[in-house]
Length: 258
Ligand code: ZN
Image (cartoon, rainbow, N blue to C red; front, side, top):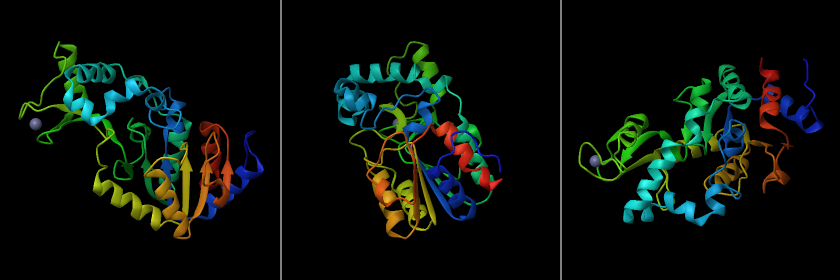
C-alpha cells in the first residue's frame, strides 16, 4: 500500500482500524466543507456564532416576526456559497467507503448537499440540520426545490410566500429555536449506537447533537476515530486522532478499503 506524505503514526493507526472494521458510522461537520469554500456558520468559531446580528437571520423567532430579517435571509440564500461549491477529496473518500460496503450511515451537520453531490447514496446521508436545497412552508409544510423559490426572489419577490397556503417559507434547514427532525435524529442515534467504528470528521464535537452521538457510540463500545483541525473533548477517549487537512487525510484513511 502506498502511503501518502501526510501519513503519521495516528493516521497509520486509523488506516489499520478502518481496514478491518465493518459497521462504520461517519459524522461530518463544517470542516469537511470549508475545503470546498463553504464557511463554518454554526460551530464555535462560526459566522453566526461570532456575529449575533447574522444569527438573527437563522433564529426562527426573528424570522417569523420581522419581514426585513426574511428579506435579508432570502438574499443570503440567493448568494450562498453552496451554489458554486463542488465536493472535495474528503467527500469523495466517503463515497469510496460506502462502496466498500461497510458504511452504516453518513451523519452530517452540513446543509450543503455535498455528500450527495459527491455520489453518496441519499438514503445513507442523515442531514441533522436539514438541507438548503429544499424550501419548506412554516405553516403547511409544503416543500419545493430551493431553486424554484430563488427564481421567484430573482424575479422580484423579496419574501416569496407559500404557493399552497400563503405562509412564510424558509430553507428546509434547522434554525435556532427549531427542533431537529425526530426521524433523522432517531436514525442517527441508532447508527451511532450500533456501529463498531465511529469516525468523526471536521466537527468540534462541542455542539449538540453531534457530541451526544459521539458519546453514544463510545458508550456502546465503538472505537472512536477523530479527524479534525482542532482538538475535541473526545480526543482522550478516541482510539486514534488525526489533526490534518481532511482532503488529504480521508483519502488515505480509505486506502486500506480498496
Ligand atoms: Zn404553506
